Length: 250
Image 1 (tube, one colour):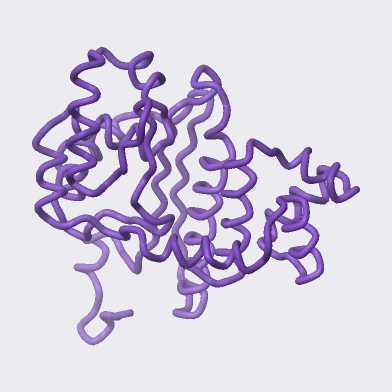
Image 2 (cartoon, rainbow, N blue to C red):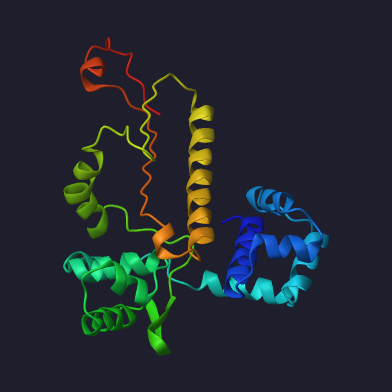
């Protein structure tokens, strides 16, 4: 993650850890809430503004940088064995995903038919797997980094391809909160790469909304999944009709 985005994310984390909102920060800095939201949306603070924000948080910029360094030490990817263990146990995978989605112990019990004893056992297992740190009072600290991702072609991705993808796309995508777009056109390599960069930024924005909303009551949050894809591709029957020598590679 670029350094300026890492700084913005560290500020968000500190606000959340201290129970502060954008509105609180706006009042503290004598700014409008819309101005503060725009600063975060643009992922850009001047050094002077960052100093003011740290003053509001009652911390030094060096402390903020230290928190970024600590995040770099977190897990970015699980081992094949860890992913296999997750997909082999539906309840273990459910609890892991729930914790990654910032649900608390009590919210998991509220939402799913899992007993207290069983949920504690599952969280203890995730602790032994080094995915979380189980704290007193059944609180949890995630040990994964913000840039965490599943292994390419690993057990989780194969589980998605086999068991999840078909169910996800078996839908007309015309109900409230649903959208599917399919566009096709001929792009240069430069435009393709620029779009890939925009897609990555959109995924980061999704994660930012997820982080921002994690403090809301469970009743106000709904599981959302977003699939975005782009690839140099042509429908196979069309591709088969290319004249010899007209085939293209990216």
